[in-house]
Length: 254
Ligand SMILES: C[S@@+](CC[C@H](N)C(=O)[O-])C[C@H]1O[C@@H](n2cnc3c(N)ncnc32)[C@H](O)[C@@H]1O
Image (cartoon, rainbow, N blue to C red; front, side, top):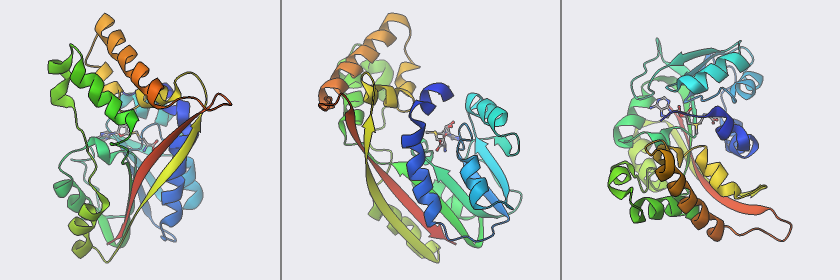
């Protein structure tokens, strides 16, 4: 899917907080190499740089649009275009950090053990993924896909729960690493503007469906989703909208 950094970064603060929370939990003191896996527009680079000023920082992402913005905004950082499922480091790294990316990939039972091999013994694999797939922001997209004339076109691309329950990741990883922590946080996001949940989702999850439609059909799909989501997330008295969003964190030491 083609990413739109402007739409994605409309909610930059809300998207940043989980990354900061994950970063704060990584105990690495002076890593030599830190990789931002699925780095997007490179917006986490300043925080990674501030945390580990002497580390070699590398961002990996498959989106040319996101990388173009990353290279413009963060000239001091190396960025490489690659699929994170295929990318291999020259040598194992100290910290492999992945914020809000691996939910886009399938086969986690193969992917995650493979990522452990990219990290040095004693190094850290740190992952954050959204896990709000039972929330209306997601189930409304399922209903829109299933109940419209675009059903046959979009249904093969619908992934209902791309991120597993935490216990399944624990079972997958616990005997392959020396330390493992998993936790979830439900962020009570307070958003402003017209139908902000739809705007939030349009920057990420919804875009994969919109991009497969054109013209009037695309507009009708978006209108259907927006109506459902506006009903599911009514405005508060002050005009703002609460959008609780659950995220899963995995922190493993190799
Ligand atoms: C929601 S954005 C997160 C960006 C950044 N980590 C952040 O926290 O702002 C997801 C990113 O994952 C990237 N991505 C998705 N699938 C990928 C893949 N298979 N290989 C590399 N990057 C991928 C997208 O291009 C996009 O930039």
